[in-house]
Amino acid sequence: MRATLHGPLLCPEDAGYDEARKVWNGMIDRRPALIARCAGVADVIAAVKFARTHEVLVSVRGGGHNAPGNAVCQGGLMIDLAGMRAVRIDPVRRTARAEGGATWGDFDRETQAFGLATTGGSVSDTGIAGLTLGGGLGWLAGKYGLSCDNLVSVDLVTADGTLLIVSANENSDLFWGLRGGGGNFGVVTSFEYQLHPVGPVLAGLVLYPFNRAKEALTLYRDFAMNIPDEVNTIGGLLTSPEGEPVAVIAACYNGSLQEGDEVLRPIKSFGPPLADHIGRMSYCQAQTLLDAAAVRGHRYYVKTNMMQAISDGARSTRRSSALRQPPRRILLSSSSNWATR
Image (cartoon, rainbow, N blue to C red; front, side):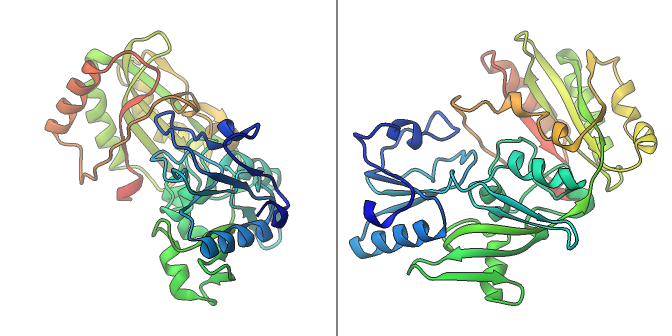
């Protein structure tokens, strides 16, 4: 197989193998028999055909978090796209073509050079592949929809090693499934997105004393239900860098900055807050606001539920749960208005 690849093929005894098998979530500790570090589409095709011919278990890794660890198989072949990170912009058509191993940090850096962006997560080292194929929440979702709503086309390698162009006009049923359906449709080697003009935004975090967590979450609930499309926001409980539990509301306003000051005033004036970090910043900066709560290599357990609204019982449960957690610098409990707007 090594002779068919342009990129390296790693076995357990090879240098770099242990680093290559690690993903963002430190709880994942699996050992593939082979890791194909693909340099391009031809490598992906060769790896898929090898696995099909030899009936080898396959997993596919993009460039980002992969919180549940499905990207790393035990004893099989991991097709690793993390080295495929190129992003190409067409400023006239306002589109971008990005390879499957790119992160949103890679993507935003290139699109913002033209004053453009599309909805993409809230942590800069999230991978574009997993987020888009799973739907794709982000700061721009209220105004521009989910990541999958902005997907124009993909290049995809099927299970038999065939390369397809998939869009609303070509292989449209497959395109429908890819826009939020998750994995196992094939290996997406590149994504084409629709872009939108995005300049400086008004964004940041506001921290409140933990003894007012119930009131802060009530404020968040009421605020999130009555905001314009230009705003997206997250409310929750976390541990401060000093080790103290706090309530937090994070927000990003993509529109007139003067109007944004007035829209965000309720969360800035409540309390008074322990700290108000909301201010004018670039969209790339806004995309890093929660990076410190998603450090690579920590051990993460993630569980989600959908709620129509944050009830009084839910607020109490969040607060009591947060009090039982050991001190750590991660999000303990969060809510988002993204899914209901």
